[in-house]
Length: 427
Image (cartoon, rainbow, N blue to C red):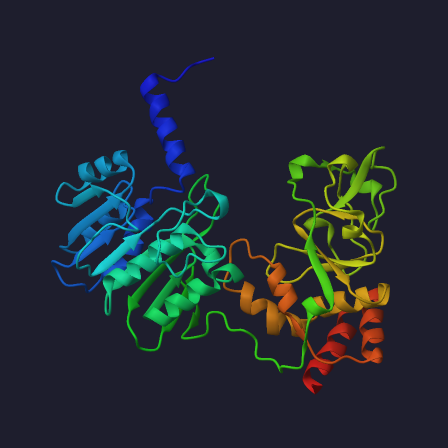
């Protein structure tokens, strides 16, 4: 086996350690786009700061836009040294950008660490966005907006969960309440190996009404619209979360499963592919219609951690990934993976499960509740548990339930949409 030279091995180890801290250096082309959009028209001599500067890519791009005073901070001493070498005229220091004393600032650029859940460090006191399920990147954005003050500018590379995830509602609200103009571009390239999609965000801080522009690959998606709005519905409409329990399947990846021979499974029940000691498993790709989902994989029964009641049928299974809802009625009680939600009606049997499946798949629910949350996310859009629970439904009648359930049983989407459109419109 060929061994790496010690210097090369040490550099590779340092790079991996940096990436484990959520720090990924900004590609030059991306840096130029963000700097140009954020800083064009800014007065010469203005102070531009990067609170987690890495090797100085964003500040180097800022120097191409105008004659600014450039200041950068980073916790990594090697990164600070690289930034100094890249921009000798800049001012750099090894410091925590979330708490360092900066002084007057006109603009802040940033590609901060993306650290979520158990990987993130404790938040310094005083950050309003450090609540619930927060990401370190949100704190850098909050600090930047606070530093520049009215008429100041910020430009950031951020996780694209900003666009539509329930967990980022507070971040979207914070930006809209503190900024007078926001531009979001959703064709930023992925950082190789990071397994996260990104957006570019620029904003001018101010107290005027916020104007929002969103682009994807140069095409305007929306201008001066809500981001995204809660659907206006009557207060007496019932929440889906009050009609059914919603849960995810086993917390395992597909590598833990064995793919079944497609010929051994037809419409869900495996005929010969499941070995003794295994259970059939439904993942997202197995939900292909409103009928019985297809078991595409198998796993050892000893690896199932959730109780049998978690998977009992009849239930509705919903694929987690997608811009629209893909759901089917599972009457067999198959095990599911974490990429699938299990929706159990609190009352009723298979007819009730078919009714709820039809509701989730109908055009009215898609237009009113689903697309406002998923349409802004062009890479890896997801249906969330919170989104499903928040869907609101008008008062129903037994005749409606039977009609929708019958349309689902027959796979008649036209009849389903005719019934549900009339239902939503009449109430």
